[in-house]
Length: 391
Ligand SMILES: Nc1ncnc2c1ncn2[C@@H]1O[C@H](COP(=O)(O)OP(=O)(O)OP(=O)(O)O)[C@@H](O)[C@H]1O
Image (cartoon, rainbow, N blue to C red; front, side, top):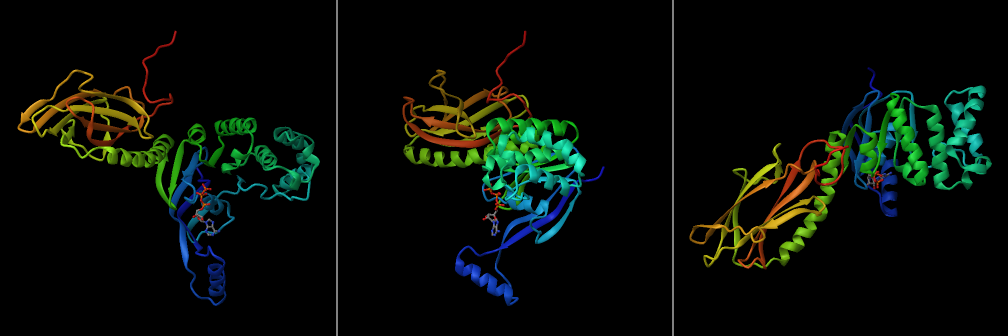
C-alpha cells in the first residue's frame, strides 16, 4: 500500500512582525542577511495517510491547522521536516483559490478541468454534472468576482467532486455553504469514503469529524496533543474545553464556600487515594471512603455529584436525602462509605465531586473533585445509557 501523504517532524516558523515597525525591521534584517526573530507556529508534526484513511484535524483558533494545511498542499514550505505527497490531491482550502475572478463559473470549470488534464470532450461531458452539483443558477455565466463566498465554495466543491482525487484535503470552507449544500457535501464525502476515497478534513465541528473520520489529530499550540482513534481524540478535546469552563466555575464556587469548621480530611476511591484522573472500572462500581473533621462531635452530612466535563449535572445526592449517617470513628473524625454504580454512564469525560454539609444539610463547607474518564466507544448519544429494547 502506498502512503498518500506523510509528514515527518514538520515545523514552521514565521517572522515575528506584527507591528509596521517590526515588519520593517524584519525586512531590513532579511535584506542585510541578518537573523530574523521567528516564532514557531508548528513543531514536530508527524503522521501518515494511507489510502482509504480519513483524518480529522482539530484544534483551537490559532493552533496551527490552516498553516498545516498550507504546508500539506504546498502553498507554504516547511522550515523543517519532510513531506511526501501523492500527485492526485484535491484541495479545497481558501475561498476562490485557483479561480480566475474575471471569468465566469463555466469558464473556470473548463480552466480547472484543463489544468487537471481533461480534454475538451471530457470537459464537455462533465460540465453539466458539475453545474448541477453547484446549483448556482444563472450565476454560472457571471464572473466569479460577483459570487458570494458560498457560491465560490459550491463551485469549488463541485469541481473537486467531479475530479474525485485520490486524496481530498479540505477545511472549514464547507461551513460557508448553506445547510442544504453542506449536507450534500457531507453525503458526497461519505460516499467517496465508502468507495475507497481518502480524506483529510480540518473542522471545528466534532460532529462532522466523528461522522466522517476514523482518526483525528489534535493540534495544540502548534504541536500534536493527541493523534489516534477519532472518538478518543475528539472526546479528550471536548473534555479539555469543558474543563476550561468548569475550572472557572469551580473557582467561583470555592470562593463562595465558607471557611467553616466541618472539613474533608481525606477520600479514597476503591481503596486508593484519588488520583487527578480516575478511570471508571469496567463494572462501573466505585466505593468512596471519606474522612471528615467535626469540631464538636456532631455528624456532618456528605454529598456527592457526577457532572459531565462541561458542568452539566448527571446525578447527585446527599446522605441526608438517603437518611444515611456517618460514623464517629475517632474524636473529631467522621467516616462515610458510599457505593456508587456508574455502569450506565456513556463513554466520555466527567467529574466526580464529594462535599461536606453541616448536620442540618443546609450549608456547604468543603468540596473535592476529580476527573472521571469513562472509556469505550458508543454511537448512541447522551450522558447515560437508558435501558431500552426494540419491538
Ligand atoms: N503568515 C503568517 N505570519 C505570521 N504568523 C502567522 C502567519 N500565518 C499564521 N500565523 C500565526 O500562526 C498561528 C497559527 O495560525 P493558523 O491560522 O494556522 O491557526 P488555525 O488553527 O488555523 O486557527 P483557526 O481555527 O482560527 O483558523 C497563529 O498564531 C497565527 O497568528
